[in-house]
View 1 (cartoon, helix red, strand yellow):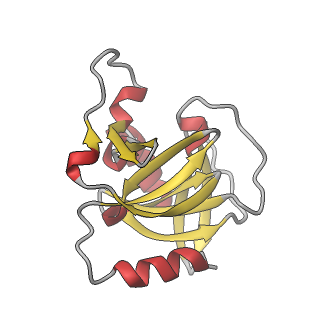
View 2 (cartoon, one colour):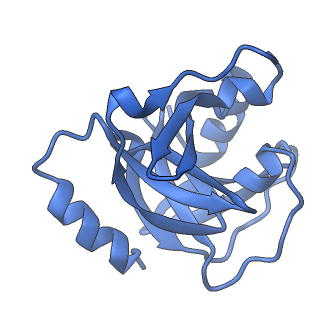
Amino acid sequence: MKHAVFDAIFEEEEEDDTKDKYLTFRLADEHYGLGIQYVIEIISIQKITDVPDLPDFVKGVINLRGQVIPVMDLRLRFGLEPRAYDDRTCVIITRMDDSPVGLVVDTVNEVRDIPPQNVTAPPAIKKGAAARFIQGFGRIDDHVEILLDVRQLLGEDELEAIGAVGGAT
């Protein structure tokens, strides 16, 4: 089942340029965003089939209208404490290297315009594994959204491993 709020928002946005639009969501107490051009759809959490020999943060696969899609829990990917899935938990189906990958998030907020002048590059204070996920910081009113680079959420080897599971070429 698609996420009804997102459907309504996306229909309004379809005619606009998606360049400065971000789907915002929450993990723990932090707010994140990812470029809407990478989002295929949002679905509620559903049964995830476990697949052996995948990284711990890849929860397994789902069957979405006959297509097998690998699912990654972003809490685990970012080293956050795991939490039980509930009725607010969503799966954002994204496009990574032309392969669909589901991202489990605590809750989806909305699609937001964040113009380039409100985006700041991440500070170069630490170049660890987590730093590669961050594209920048988007200032919205009185808070900051951590903008993710969807293409960096998986390394080449990880993308190959889950792509093989999902049937990607």
